[in-house]
View 1 (cartoon, rainbow, N blue to C red):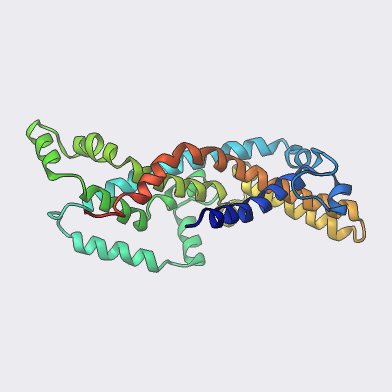
View 2 (view 1 turned 90 degrees about the vertical axis):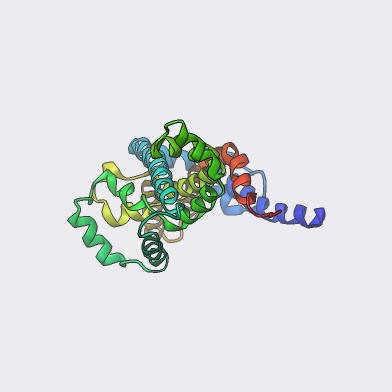
Length: 277
């Protein structure tokens, strides 16, 4: 692709992001007047103070970090176990398990049956509702299966001769050799876990278990309600907009920080297998 085209696409992506960042640091008056792109006319932290003035936001941050870390680790490990087993041609019932997995990619129980299931399992107002339903994704299993199949059979045979069992082969050979795929899946699942607020909205009434996204959603709704109750008050309406922009920045920054750490493995995972000899 032409370098000029790449540069143009980069600019198209960056300009709105930088404008959102600049607007989030703008005072209500400057935001109402507009006329800036990269640097606000009046620097202000009022929008961020409004977001963080609620002390429960820090507890919500802890919940988000905990559910993201635990959710990613358990999801990747569980999917890797299933994929490793399904990658073996001598597995009994392998075709049946594959068909069952493919069905889950196209059909789901629906919102109401799922809610009733969560209630029956005792997962309402339970932290594990963030973890257990996200343990399995057959799409991720398919990706990992393709990686495990590329591992030379001679490696496993050598390990078996040395006395290694299935778990030893899985943990010491299969997992380390599949780091690009594991990092790719971890990144996708981590972004989903961090941004997810619908799970809390559907299954949580205990505000102590709200993730940060749900708390920020509440802040936005409250600010919008105040704006509607104060029609004609430009400063209040603009502050509401500024707070919304600040919430975008707050929820995006952690992903921006983590992504470069996984980028090397992510690129390897996307490219591996793309070229065949």
